[in-house]
Length: 334
Image (cartoon, one colour):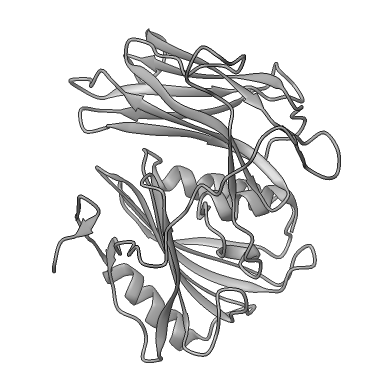
């Protein structure tokens, strides 16, 4: 599978995870390389602020040989009504054709995350511009505010192999000690077979729990259930459309279809017969959005097509799953 497909599978769970989608056979952890730094004793870009927004941190996520933008933004002035946003991320290969995403914020939005990947043409120690523009109207003709943030790259994606500067130390964005329990944000059941928790990790802004069959591992599995949470405002339908657009480019055997959807939920499936040297896979995924962020729950099997009986079972499981409210890192009891 090419890098565009790899990035979307991992970043939009597209999961910022180690073992989901086509790359789940690899246990390599993603790395977040900071490109903004607080303080005066640095030449790196500092986090900036506007009337409505403040950059928390920005940088590049490195996942299995490719990289993409990740900029965390806090909303410091809550709107009284819905307002509309446009994220503009510099394209190193063509500054006149930036990466553009449109969404909205309202009084319940506490933060948002600007993401795009993979990004080709990045050069080490070069700064790239990311903007978040706020508009009064949905047509985006009346600009209210604009956050402009420079992000310094410590990765090079100009050649066939990604390079990381030797002057920095990249740290995994998702870390959790063995004793730290990551709360499950979904209430759901499994099928009749024996499943167990294979891995879990969190950094406060994102978390993941991966479930495997009793005799398998997260490095070597035939079927995998993934529960992923990301803090921010990413509309489920937009995530689906972005995945579909990118996946369709380089996988002619791809089949992708919506099972059902609403304003805050989408349930869909996708499968392929083998692409780019990767084995066939069939995944059923649900994406939901609530006031705390975006949540993903998926079942995937390394097969061209899941049996109809098993497919119906997992469609029902994912459809019936409900969201769990988390208080101070602890899930409320059902």
